[in-house]
Image 1 (cartoon, rainbow, N blue to C red):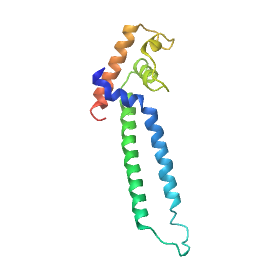
Image 2: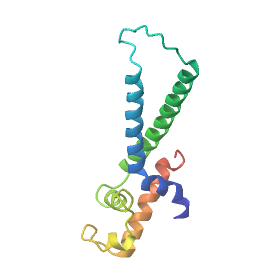
Image 3: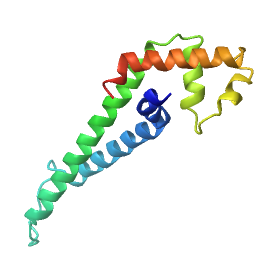
Image 4: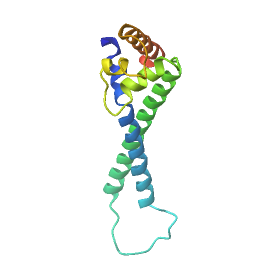
Length: 140
């Protein structure tokens, strides 16, 4: 499983990555609403801070770049999952890596959801990880 280490890390963090993208969307949307150019300007005697404007644009740019990278990872994972067998491999990967906490292998293969032996469980898990590695491993 050492060769799948990076892939497993992304699978385990899949939900966190998705929630981070949602949080970035909220922040970028808020930043856009804070500066609404469609509202008529009011002359107020306040001064403009060009440094603040530059910093704000850079932060938005960094957030947008982070969002793009995380969306790329999400899309790769979802594309890789499509290559898995829907009856055996996909449910196993979802149970092992996409739950709120990482399940121990024996908790999965002893559950009623997976009616097969420990050795068959490990074969299916290995095959699923190898399929994911083949389809998206070099892109992550």
